[in-house]
Image 1: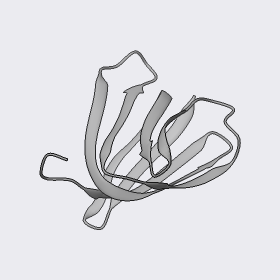
Image 2: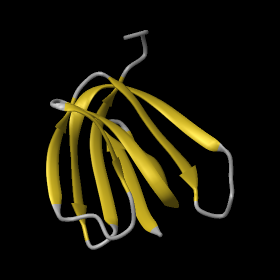
Image 3: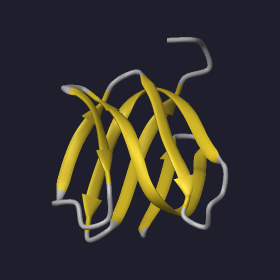
Length: 86
């Protein structure tokens, strides 16, 4: 399981556990699964997509950009929320 925290300048947007999380990376989309290698990546405009690990519904968050850090099954993303279509 991944521990996922997503924050923006206006505050915390999500704090949950997830089985996987997909990001719109600056070099292309990628998915983080448990056991992923350490990573720091810039994020492009697009959607963060994750499902809570307890079989919960899929969540989508439109972003204008930001960055993500992955370390020991902890995923922390700092993003600008995209209020418009990208």
